[in-house]
Image (cartoon, rainbow over all chains, first blue to last red):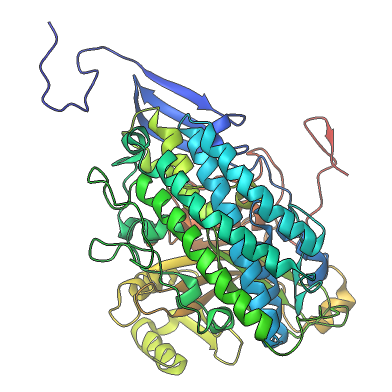
Length: 401
Length: 176
């Protein structure tokens, strides 16, 4: 006869099981690229997860030591290939910090438009792919439908749909084409109401809540300890966003913009929009909250883009002609982090006075976010592993560089 | 707190383990000795004024010039630097620490230089130190699991060293 167990989570109390090593990936649909996880399981319960990375290592940092900063821009695209614009921005700001270049007003607003549109596109993929991880296909198609339109806009601005190399030290490679702003506004007007559909499909979906609520709970202190940043950090209730708290060179881009950091304060998320209520099953820091923060950031990004469009169309100055970086860089070293969609993306540039950096380093946000997996998955069910890894929204290109 | 005050305060507390500083740089930095880094980091994390609770990044930088003519002009002796970028989610400030190491321990080629691990202070350091070990060849004493992380485990050499040469072949694959 089965032993009576009070704790409903212990599901296999009386079944004798052996410890088993299960290999997941590197070609697994829910590992978002080429991530290999080795799970040590006992029945359905995972006791240890060890991520193996490096399958997509392309020596980006070594290449950076052999190219001028301008030439390295295309390589930054290929790190986080879902948010290429934000990666360009990070490296460009870092180089500008070294050469102490001040941007014209208009160029800053252009960058805000582009960076926030990149954030929307990236979070859309994050949302859709998370649906896939949990076994629902339709949100993915919805997400890609809208993302497609952002990519069309980006294509019109710079000619590329994925690897843009658009924002460069000094500003951007070209001004926004005529009529682009109207198209962008039309897109935002059409896109904003659709977000309610996503909330209906996923955020408030009973099955979705069951799969994500109270799973992979991470406290704020633990998130900081592991260097988690971006939505992962804010999903744990830590009020930290580089757009507000970062270095002046970066925050001055957002000077005067009205936006609140998306984080739960005193049990509430910012009330600047109508959002679906937080279900009572959820716990701050679980998979659901990480997902929710991302969804709210999309709404907020729409707001910021609207403000940026107004400022851009009235701003004086030019849109920022790229600097010819064939001459020598000043001696010195700079580090700068920006708030990319997946977390804080840092670039570190050491210059010995020649035109090629002595060392180019990319601090990857997903690299730190992923390192927490083994801690989060301890003691969860095998089926929850994709839910936890998916909620971190990783891109392997950025982790392996 | 100004940079000068901080350096003085750290020097008072840790004495010879604070080996230098550069407050004129764009990102001012403080130099710490390899055997004092864990202690200093723990203090920086827990101190009520500083609370540097977020370790952003650990980077290894190799200073080595193969060409003797250029090396004479470089203005530095060959060495390795490990750079720590810290910040605080409470006070929103940042700090840069540096540890200077010889390129090889006791100048014996192949013997990796050693520095204390800070994995016990911030868990972020666990993977970051593995990466620095993997790519720059620095041994972190006291690290719980110092293995290669980006390169395969049987990879030979430390790719981000300036004198690194790609292997001729790796498991039958041509290297160069």
